[in-house]
Length: 159
Image 1: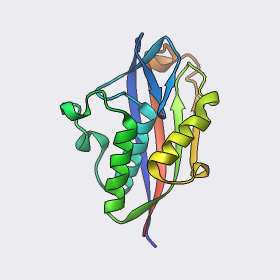
Image 2: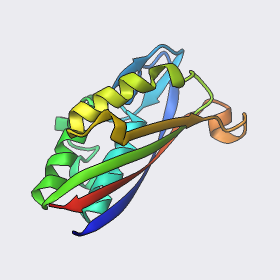
Image 3: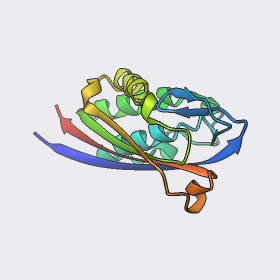
Image 4: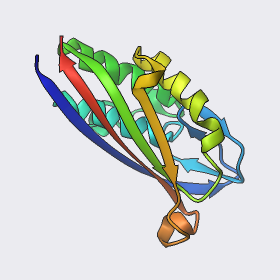
């Protein structure tokens, strides 16, 4: 059995009065992530981890921010498309471990819903998806609430 690991990272600028979607969940907050798609930083990091593990480059390679097809699209769709690419290479997904870094809003109450959205999109058990959150202790662009960051690692295995 061939096992591979992938790492993903994403960052998005936060803007006033903009929607804030994280892990497929709409968060109530005065700021939201800005990007070509819905700017779901968590799902973008997971996509990059999965694509990287399968040696399929990165999210920007497959879903260019200059392509109007992806303008405003739900990142759940990008995750589903990334999973298809990984499966086409003969891999199944073992688990996801992800970390969000932002000052506000509090993520903990939303983690079960995020896990459910991701589990459905990927087709794995909710127990195989770990999501954690931390702050940047009010330092840097994260601490000033100018941006949000997500990291993800995944394990995939050849079927």
